[in-house]
Amino acid sequence: MTSLTPKDKETMRTFWKMASSYSEDIGREALNRLIVVYPQTKIYFSHWNDVTPGSPHIVKHGIIIMNAVSKAVTQMDDLKGELLSLSELHAFTLRVDPANFKLLAHCTMVVLGIRFPEEFTPEVHMAFDKFMAALALALSEKYR
Image (cartoon, rainbow, N blue to C red; front, side):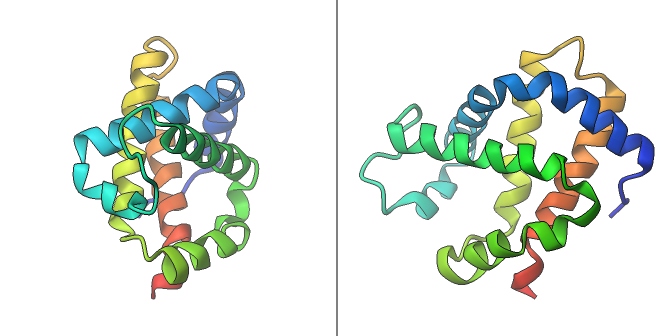
């Protein structure tokens, strides 16, 4: 994995400062997209009685995820340390396949490209992709 350069971090911070005011919508749309495009991921939400796109549980969890992403943007220098409790939760309690972190990252980038066609430049896309890969790696820390 290519690590985030200082320029990548600045690009992420600048872009996310603008995009974060829509983070709840981004989270909702990304998680909806995940369960539609990758229906096998519904298994991780089977404890909810409604796992259809737009359901209250999906909307709420999408918002929770994107709030965590927003927080991670402010803590890029120590993602493993800052996300340790989330890594433990996903590894030991929820038992989520870490490959799903990458799927959600992809869905999030699709949403960003749709919502911000001018601002989601190739440079921003690259920085966001590297950031999400670092975030997925940090969330996968306790799986090893």
